[in-house]
Length: 388
Image (tube, rainbow, N blue to C red; front, side, top):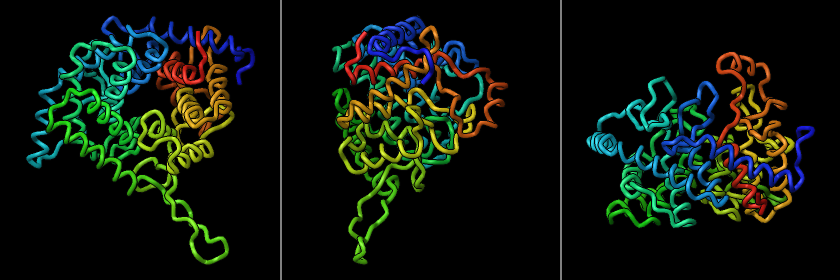
């Protein structure tokens, strides 16, 4: 932990208040949550994925107004692309090729427009994560979100048509793969869309079929088989399946897989696959309270991410291990700057230290404050009963 940071109960509570303030202060008048207001590559942009978790952290912290504005902004952004979605779906149904560059973007300007600079844009997970967060906020606060019904229908049509196609992952990499964390987000989002009760019968049926298809595909190709043991008898004693994998057809893990257990619920926390996934991510990627993205990570040298510690802590808490969860919350708090801002990642333990400087030269210091880090801190703090 960083020397001098207050990780007493009072200090943890103070960072809850500070996180609410950081997120609220930087929310755009449009309702968008900027990923990081001062970071060169992120400035002026909002991601549906980041925003969904930021909004969930605020919503869980009894902050109803800000998340409602974010969800209204998201509804405007998604709803405005109904024509584009209709065209993409119709072309795909005719068997025409649709390139990643033609799909909906993953990030938008704070005014809700497409970005003009090049980015790794075709990501499906944000649309699922947004609907998941929207449904939770509406249920929690009874929020009336303008345009949400139309936007949910648009996003559902988009995801039911394209859920099984490759796209970039959470980290905007490997567009050629089908990523399990992406499938988990879509699974949660389509379940949320059904629960909101705004779909017509055909759309609801299509969403339910996609949910079933995702679960079957992940079970068949996205879960590594556990090693069989014979116990000296020569006969296998266990043919159980092991942990979720980074993408279909590999045995690698990625810390984003934690979301597939909690909060997305692709596998519930007590399920053997869920238990194995959390354990494998922690074994391979957790270091002294911080969590790396994946073992081959070279971005800023491959440091430990604040928000991923939040996901691991959430899973420990939900599985009935509050002491372990608190350890991750304390580590997160210990990484805050003197004025209470949380970075994207910290560089004290790097997987590829020789690659750090090239990113500093390209984009400047690590993104700080990262609003998603603050949102995940709020989620875990609420889970553990740490209040302002």
